[in-house]
Picture (cartoon, helix red, strand yellow):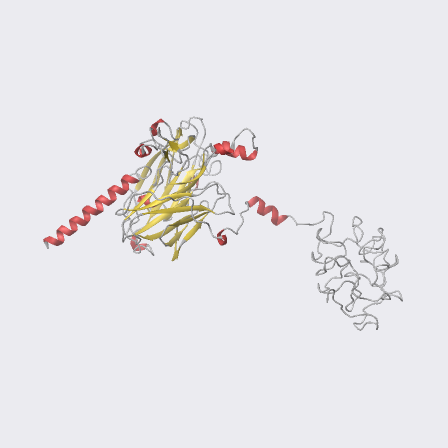
Length: 557
C-alpha cells in the first residue's frame, strides 16, 4: 500500500513538472486563467473576464536585445521577433498572436477591448465561430453589427461560449488583422460528452497552432504596392513568410565572426507513448491554402471547423484561410526533433512555406533543418480559387456571345445547319429534310423574304454562334474541310448541294452566297407565307438519293 501511494505521488509530481514546463515554453501567448480548466460534467459555467489592449508596436525592437545571436533574448517580455523582420505591427497585450481565450462550453466570455492605437484608428473584434444567439451585436463586424471602438476608448464584449470547438478571434477593421491582431478561442467540453473524448491523453493549451502569412512591410503598404506597383521598391528587400504561433526563420543575422543566426521556430513538446490533441487554425489573410504534415507521424483528424467528425487517419491535410482542424498525434516515433510543415499549394497565392518543431522531451534537442519542405502532390493543387465577384461575373456573363445575337439557339449548332440535325451529319447532307433548310423555315420561301429576322443580323450569321466557330463550319468537320462542301459528291449534285448556287437559293446557303443575302429569312417577308414549293426545290426528300448521290458520306472515311 505504501508503494502504491509513493507511485501515485511520483506520477503527480511528473505531471506537475510536465504541465509547468509546457506553460513555460508557451507563456508568450497562453496565460493562466481561472477558466482554463478541465471542463466539468455536469457543466458548471463560469464568467471569464479578459482585458485586451491594442496598440502599434515595432517588431525586432530594442526589447529583443541580441536576438537571435543570443537565442534567449528572443523570448524576452515584449520582444516581438516574428520572422526577424523589423516593421510596425499591431499587438494585443504586447504579443502576436494575442492572448488565447480557453474556456468551457456555456461559459460567459467578457472581454474589455481598450483601443490604444497611436494612429487614432478605430477597431472591432470578430469572434470567429461563435453562434452569438441573442447577442448578434457582439459579433464585432464593424459598421454592420456595431460601431467601431474609437481611439482612446473601450468597449466590453460579452457572449456565451457556444458552440464547443476550435475557434479564433481577429480585428475586423482595416488591415489590423494582417498586421498582427488575432488570437485563438478554444471552447472545450467535458470528455463525457465528446465523441472522441477518450481517444487522447492530453489536450494541452499550448498545443494550439496558429498559421499566418507575414510580410516585412505593413499590410496597407503591401496592398497599395500590389494595386499600383512602384518601380522604386526593390522586391528583394522584402521578406515573406508563414508564421506558426508568431514565429518563423526568414531574416539572416550575423555576429562579429560572420556566423549566421535566425529567429527561432515555435516548438511543441510531447512525451513518448502519449497521444495528444492538436488544434490548427489558419489566420491566413491572402488566398493561401497550406498543406500541414508532421515528419514521421500520421495524423488522425477528429474535428473540422469546430465540429467533430468520424476519425480519419491521414498523412497530411490542406487548410484554407479561416478553417480549423483538430487532429490526434501519437508520439510513437523515435524520441528526437521532427519538422512540422505548412507548405503552400501552388494553385493559391502562398508567398512562402512555414515550419515548426515537434520535440520529444527525452530526445535530441538539435534543431532539424525544415526548409525546403516536401513537395505538395499535384492532386492538392488542381483547384483554382476565384473570388466571389469573379464567380458571379462568370455565372452571369455569356462567354463568346455576339452582342447583337438573338437567344434560344443551341450554341453548338454550326452555321447553316438545321435544328435537331445530328452533329455527325455531313455538311449539306439531307436526312428527310434539305440540309440547308433552317428550323421553322417555310420550305418554299424565296430567300429574299424571311420573317422575324433581326435587321442587324450579319449575312450568313447563325444565332448564338460561338465567335470561335468558322462561318458555315459543321461540327466534327476537319479543319481542312471547306464549309458546307459536299464530300466526294459528283458535280451534278441536286439543289442545296454545290457552293455555286444562284442568288434565289433557300436560306442558310454556304458562304459563297452574295454578301447581301440574308440568313434565316429577310425581314420583309410577310407572315403566313404559303408553303408551296418551287418545282425545283425538294421538300422532305426521301433518304434514297439519286443514283449519283451518295448517302451520308463521311469526310475522311
